[in-house]
Every structure is written in structure tokens, then in C-alpha cells.
Image 1: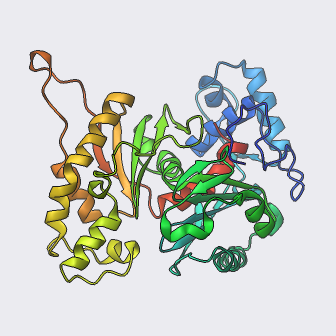
Image 2 (image 1 turned 45 degrees about the vertical axis):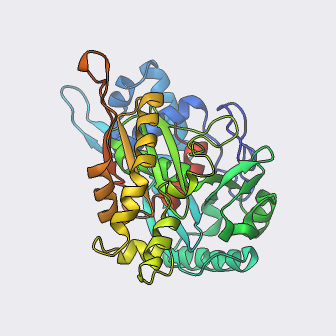
Length: 389
């Protein structure tokens, strides 16, 4: 459920055959390659699929027929492409499988439904602060049932739940050390609790990592194969995508910004400190979500927070540029759009280099995924684990 395995090994929490939906099995590495090509193109001919693989045309034909037989692919309208017989277009059967995404932030929760084509069918924001784990899970389960009914999705078509939460992993990835407002979620074995609640396999990831996954499939990842996602929330963390694939690290904590000492912690670009600054200047802010929706760049306290935070932010972008050499650094999470633009405009790469020549630098961009990237990415995690590269 939370450890990364090779294609040949079942992911903990997801049996090789889903007992609730026996016809949905994890795809083999070759099948995943075919499914991912079709996903990226949406509709494509068998001949075009062959051109994107190193497999023989007969092997591609066999794999496609195999996936059609499993109900994951279908042959669409035949299209003539040059000489010869018209070639039927191959596409995903979007209604073959669905997943649920759940994201828990310090002051709100989000739930979404995705189909096999990685299309987000609906997103729901639950504004109640998730301080009580049991009460929050009841609210989430109620939201899931309503979403399934509204979208006419039978529950047996769900392959699992991707669950995103703020914090870092401990105890061999079985537990999360979450921020103080999420104390009730911290340092307990979440997997059995969540699987008992949802009655489905569950994948648990850090919300910055799932946001990076969502961005890789539906946002900046469409043009940047490698990027670092900066998640500005109550806290501050990151997710890493290298050559189109999320990088989790040995303990699931890749992207955790543990680069500040105790004195510097209050100057890192975590939105809890901006809220504290605004309140000290008489601006009434209820939560991070309230800040995101009502942000005004002229509020007293905004400028002083930016000035105090920029050195810490500059350290981050220069560090990740040097360590990972990504195409882009994405500013996301619950960051207000206007504030994100202000930070991007003023963030600086350190430019003292030998002979006055600097290395190429990544683009600094706002998140491009439409909606809550963390919950979108959470919903896509089971699909990537089971069907796609």
C-alpha cells in the first residue's frame, strides 16, 4: 500500500486480483506500456502504438487483443492512414475502472472520482477541519457515496483509494508524522484503519507527492518530463518527478524540506506563518483555505512576510536546481495564485559562476493542474500502480 515495488511484485494493499472486482488485475509491464501510450494519445492506431515501442508488431497486436479481452481497451472507428485497409483506432474503456482520491489538509479535506482514462469526474471540498479522524472519515465516506450515485458508478468498479495527507512517513512507512492540527492522524498505522473504513485497497502518500503526480499527468508534466513540485500549505514540502515518474525515496520522504534549523523554521515559506503575520496586522484569516480564496496582495503583513521568506525560498530553488536539474519548479499546494506570481517574480537563482557563465535554470511556474492537485494525484496513484507506467 505504501511501499514502491517493481512491476512483478504486488503492491501491499492491492492484491494481484482485486477481490471486489475480479476482472481488474494489475497489468504486466508490457501491458502497462501499451495502456500508457493509449492514455497519452487518447485514441491511436495499432500501427502507431508499434512505432512507440521496441516490440514486434505481432506482439503489440497480441497485447492489444489481450487488453481488449480484459475490457480495458476497445477498438473504435476505423480510420484510413495511407495505403491498405483502414485501421481501427484503439482507446481506453474509461468506465472499466474507477478510483477515489482523498486529500487531508490541516483545515479541510477533498474527495474526487477518476476513471481509467485519468479523467476527473467530480471533486468535492469538505471545509470541516479534520481534527477528529473518526468523524472526518465518516464525512469522507458519505461524500464518496454521494459522488458514486451522482456519477452512476457502481462501487464494484472501484479499484481502490489514493489517500494523501500532510506530513512525513515513519515506522517503515506505516505511520505519518503530520502537522499539529492533524495530531489525531499522526503516529498510528493508518492503512488498516482506512481499508476498514473504505472497504477497498488504499495507497497512502504525502500530499506534496500526490500533487506532483497530478501535475505530471494533467499539468506541467505534459511539457516537463522532470520537475520539482513545491507544495505551499500549512507547512511546506515538495514532490519530485524524474523522467515522467514520481520519485518517492527510500522511506517515502523525498521532497521533505528538512533543510532549516530550528531558528530558520519560522522563516520558511509555510502559509501558517503568513496567516500569523496577517493576524498580527489585523487581517482576520480563518484558515489556509480562507487565505487561498480571499488573498489580497495589499493586505498589511504580506510584503513583510515575503521579504522575510525569500531567502529561505531562494535556498530551496537553488538547491533543487543543483540537485535534480529539473525542467521546471512548480509552485503549488494551497498557494494563492496572486501570491504565487509575486514569489515567482521575486525568487532568484544565485548567479555567481566561473567566467560569468551560469548553467541552464529550470522555469519557475504556477501549478497547471485544474483543481486540487493533491486529491487529483491521489486518485491517479492506484491507476498508475495498476495500469500505467
